[in-house]
Image (cartoon, rainbow, N blue to C red; front, side, top):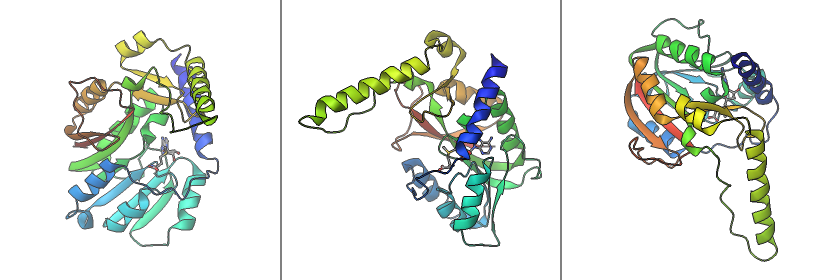
Length: 260
Ligand SMILES: C[S@@+](CC[C@H](N)C(=O)[O-])C[C@H]1O[C@@H](n2cnc3c(N)ncnc32)[C@H](O)[C@@H]1O
């Protein structure tokens, strides 16, 4: 089962290596804006590592502000894209690399590491652990790790939020929602919800569709971070609200800021 999962999740890399159409999508999540603000006075002194940089959504702001900025992605196509669109700058590099093996970087090299938009969720469970260990190794003592991850609270998936439709479009919209929900239920039919809850994580096919995605119970993620020796600073939901671990949410994505 684990080997199959590993193989399946390894296929995610090929998906990310395909050309994408939303290269121009430069929005930031509210939590990312809050973090930029929180460290406003420190960016100029920070060495930043951006893992799974993708098409460079975060690179525009995080690289502008940092003293040094290194970005890697295991999909060569994404790195080629970043190298093409970002003007050359001495403090900024984009290179092909895997978050599970950061051996090119020495111990305690970075002040701030980010793995944004759930990039860590496309790695199999074993590789995820390796990535966390590597991140901890290359962070300076007192350094920050900021990442987001999918929450298992969102599973089983609820139908997508309907757009405001009227007339003939309304029944079509409802039919579309029902079809998407049925398709996701089918694709995840082998996942036992109860077992996933007890284990604390599951690998699922979600609205991103072509990739297999790791979802983790937020309380299990927190325990894991604490086991690794990280201290929790803050968790936000996708709207930038503080997250309360005591309350059951149906939030799909959480942003964690932790300190070594
Ligand atoms: C959802 S995209 C997010 C891209 C970007 N971080 C952002 O916030 O827009 C996830 C990215 O993580 C990359 N990725 C996934 N696993 C990786 C790994 N083990 N090492 C490096 N990059 C990885 C993928 O290639 C993809 O570009």
